[in-house]
Image (cartoon, rainbow, N blue to C red):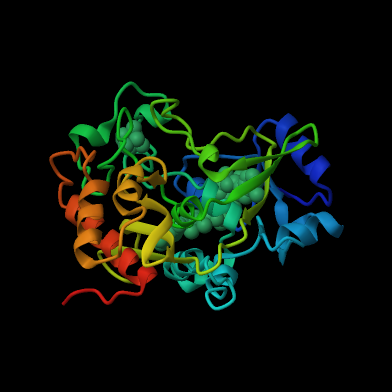
Length: 336
Ligand SMILES: Cc1cc2nc3c(=O)[nH]c(=O)nc-3n(C[C@H](O)[C@H](O)[C@H](O)COP(=O)(O)OP(=O)(O)OC[C@H]3O[C@@H](n4cnc5c(N)ncnc54)[C@H](O)[C@@H]3O)c2cc1C
Ligand code: SF4
C-alpha cells in the first residue's frame, strides 16, 4: 500500500474543496471499500479526507437519523449499516432497508460501513479487482468477464460491462422511492431521486455513479409511507456469512380493497445498476395477491434477462428471491 496522509477538516466546504482541488485526495467514510482498493493496488491516494472529522451541525447531520415535520425519514450519509439494521421495528413500511442492511457483509463490516459509502462503493468483478488486468472499466478495450468467468455477473442490462451493482442498500432504496441530497463543490445542495445516482455501462462503463470529485452525498430521505405500506427484502448467497449476494429483491406495496397498490420492485446483484422491474410492477399492480400471481410477476421480472453462458442459474434464483420478498410483503405464506 502507498504512503498517505489522513486529513481531518471540520467543515464540509473545506473538505469538499480539498478533494476537488488536490490531486490524489479522496473522501473516506467507513473506509471498507477504499482501503480494499488501496490494499489491492487499484488506488493510491495521497490524502484520505475524513468525513468523520466534519464537526458541528454539519457533522451531526451526517451521523444522525431523524424524522421531518411531515413524516419523511432522513438518514445521514455516515449512519452505519449496523444502525440501519436495527430500524426494522421502527421503520414501519420501510422494513426492506433494515432487512437488507442486516444481511449485508459481516457484523464487523456493518459497524464501520456507512450508508453513503455503501451506495458509492465500486464493483466486485474479479477482473476489475485484479491489479494487472485492464478491462473496459479501467480504460481497456474489452470486458474480460463476457468471455471469461462471469458466474456472478449481470443477467439484466449487461453490456458493454457486465458488473453487478454491489450495494445491498441501493435496491431497497429504489423500491422505497428514496431521494438523496448531494452537496456540490460550490456549496449548492441538490435533491435527486436515488435512481439518478447510478450510471449504467452504456452511459459510461468506467463509473457507477454521477458524483464528481468533491461532491458529497449528505443524506438519504424516505418518503412518508402510505397507510398500510409494507416492504420486504430477500436475497440468496452461496454461504450465509462474509459473502456477496447472488441475487436480491426488494418490494414495496400496500393493500387496498384486497388489491395490490403502489407496487415497486427492485432487483439487486443481477444488473450493473439497481434494477427496477417495471414488468413485475405491471403484472402486480391492481391484482389480488396470490402465489400464482407472484410466480407470474417473477417470470415477468426476468423476461428481459439475457444471461451469459455461465450465469443462467441466476434467472430462477432471481425469480425465487422476488417471490420470497412478495410473499413476505403481502404476508402470504410461501408454498412448501
Ligand atoms: C467480505 C465482504 C462482504 C461484503 N458484503 C456486502 C454485501 O453483502 N452487501 C453490500 O452492500 N456490501 C457488502 N460489502 C461491501 C461493504 O458494505 C462496502 O465496502 C461498504 O458499505 C462501503 O462503505 P464505507 O463507508 O466503508 O465506504 P468507503 O470505503 O469509505 O467509501 C467508498 C467510496 O465512496 C466515497 N464516499 C464515501 N462516503 C461518501 C460521501 N458521503 N460522499 C461522497 N463520497 C463518499 C469514498 O470516497 C469511496 O470512493 C462487503 C464487503 C466485504 C469486504
Ligand atoms: S464486467 Fe465490467 S469490470 Fe468486469 S471485466 Fe467486464 S468491463 Fe471489467
